[in-house]
Image 1 (tube, rainbow, N blue to C red):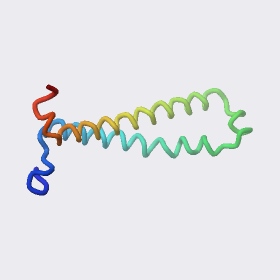
Image 2 (image 1 turned 180 degrees about the vertical axis):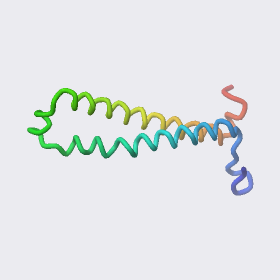
Image 3 (image 1 turned 120 degrees about the horizontal axis):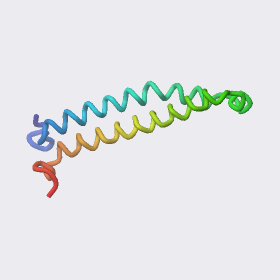
Length: 93
């Protein structure tokens, strides 16, 4: 696939496809976990302290899952960029 007569060309289609899939997966995780994190952030301090340990554990798990989503999103973008750059056409030199 060429854009503007060779200025932007996908050199490695497998890396591009994997990067796209990983980026989409990361964005789904981010989109679905962000409202849950915001719910816990907008709780008043008194209400947050009253929450039992189970809800606190759920909140911590959501934060970990959100950070994994951000990592996957970034990794997908990096793979897409690597697949486009000519320098990485045959791997690292």
